Image (cartoon, rainbow, N blue to C red):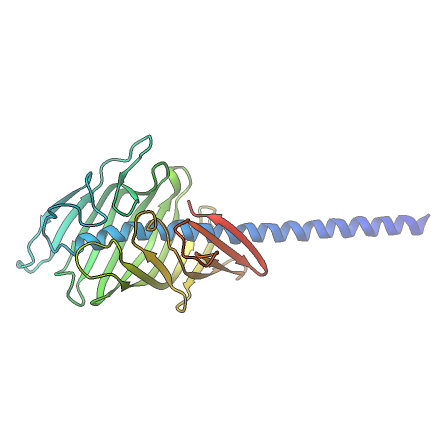
Length: 292
């Protein structure tokens, strides 16, 4: 009888131990997936904001006479300084209209992305010139689809590097999902390289690769670092319905609490589809999710 009780107690102890280990593993997995989803949300919101800045920077202070690519009806450009000859650069405000309470909540662009609110931009000179820089301040700015709009708060700085590339920096840029969740932040340095498409005004039909690294903090307070794989950079395909997120790219994400790593794949089916689907690879386990 004593031997039987001992065996039973041992089995119970093993089950409890297994349960605790399994719960701990599930908790870590959940945190890892959260960092993959958090980075996806922050980076895609960031770049849909940056794309419209790059397109207007190409105008060099001029007013467009019609659609120029991303920009269609429903937005305004206000130049407070539009002269390149006065030596102090150009300043302008992009306004996409107010955030609406029902769908469509923003103004749709030629890339299929909806935007609302303001971006205040200053640029030091002609955008085509090497070392020209800009600063963008987001004021109640939102980006997303018809019904889900993510707010972006903070500043982005950029510098023209070559005729087909430019560098951007952002420190503790804040992103909020659908105006309901707590803010999360993203910090980093990226290089954007145009790999296809002409250099005329307008980004539609262009392809761009994004390289870089940085860090992030989730709404829960968990922090992580991120590095884009330089051999498989993030790829933006500037087409209607494609520009909402990246169609390709690998990112290594390291959670700061325990140094656990995962790989984030923006092209899980290897077809560069415009499907807003990504994959988190943790060890041998794969988790497919949709970028909100």
